[in-house]
Image (cartoon, rainbow, N blue to C red; front, side):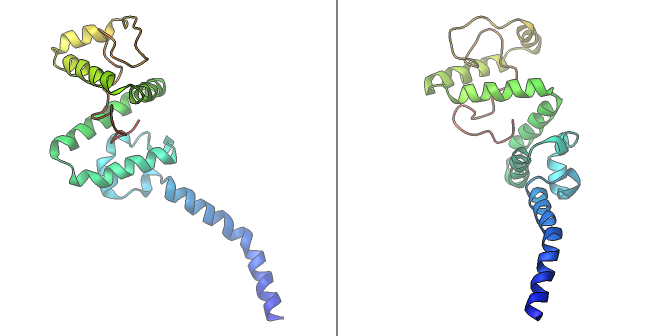
Length: 172
């Protein structure tokens, strides 16, 4: 009799418990901005306005960066902050184009990756006015794969440091 009553109680409460367990798993994988730690909020501040619109996978990637951030060299911290600010300023269409470009860069053979990296460094060393001029020009037709070293127009967003060989340390 007690066994039956206990089983009935568990069955009666099960529907009420299942949604909260599912909700807890979703919240754990995809926390809202208010659920982040103060340190995460400080590091990820450039993403604050978009945070609640990011999918769980991107949030976890950014949180991983925030956790590694204190151990980064100051110049790397500065680079990460600048990249987050630049990313936050992009439109959704520009972000998608940057993601596609990144994917195409990752698929290039090593020698093409080196060429892209070299051309990007050359572009970065140009005076700001010349970079602006090149950025406004349409890209020259090229037989190279999409996102490969096209001249004279630079990539829409800078290739991440080490993008040619490894997963980005920040998001896309």
